[in-house]
Length: 338
Image (tube, rainbow, N blue to C red; front, side):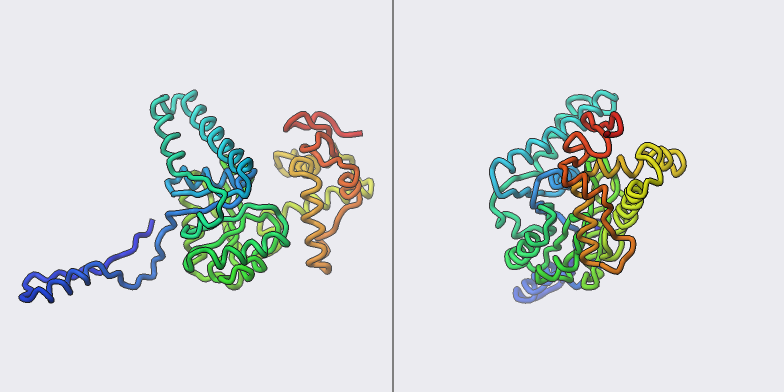
């Protein structure tokens, strides 16, 4: 971690009290440094599926974290998710003999001690870093960032955890585009190691450096970075791959099962693209593709397969609804849906 440096002046033979006072004052004055101060306080707005994991990771890394939700019920649910996850992770370490129960209890208390919860958005006004993990809707995100830009301290870094929406439009809405990045985590945050850090054309070099350094401090995380391109790195490659697999179904080129088996055994993927679409949520996949088609109508990689639209219209959304291209039992596909 980078630490700010202080200009210390030692005056050993100051003859006058005024000279000694001036020297003491100089000892406390910071001088300009090219090394940005590390992030110590983090605000996470939205403690749902992604937000609670981000808050937990930051607290585990030793940062003071404030989690914010609009309603008490959502706030309590977010806190419960974090505490359950912390206990589960530490419980596994105890079971494997990596920690004794006393050490696990102490670690759980340390992590919880780094967390506070609030329904008042003003509670994050002085945080060094504010991460948004709210609903994926630009009509909500834009006014949210406009509000945060007026509320938070001027040198705070802003970050969106969006998986597919443009970072630049959010940055510009905040009124501090040079202090704005994307921080895209993957679900579940506690287990998935990758973090994508996204810079817009406005992001300052200091902000980008600080954001990458912050993400690298999180437990067991690997950081990659890119420009503000649709879907960033992972989803820019992954979602069109899913679309092409579903287009094969539309054309009758191959079956659901054969497409997925082929990509698992032939390309080494842990899950085939059709099963992955089901797992992510067919409504989520459809929404991403529709947004990209609208924003980039001339990009041939962005299109919405007919079978995907049909499944969403029928309410067959994949794992979350129990049926999509597969029948699901919890987190496992059991058979291809008729």
